Length: 113
Image (cartoon, rainbow, N blue to C red; front, side):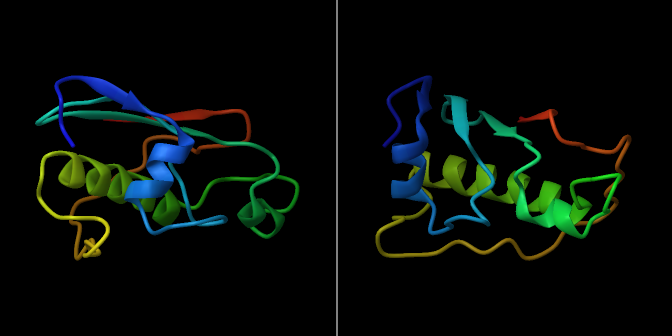
């Protein structure tokens, strides 16, 4: 799939990742190359998790921020030839030392690198 630096639109992302709404957490890939990805998640008030996290003070759950990073990693792995998304699913297995520096709220844009 890799042909130097390029981006992916929503349709192309759907062809790589098995995730679908409401758990598809990558809206656009601005750049993907052999060893780098820049992906975007536009966080809106319409996200279903804001109904309960937290009413009146919506915050994107940290675990979903990590999941967005994992999905970006899956796109990077597929792009670099690490697996065939039509035949295999890649699983994110562990993470250590995660720190959240500030809350992610509606209107924010997560830029995942």
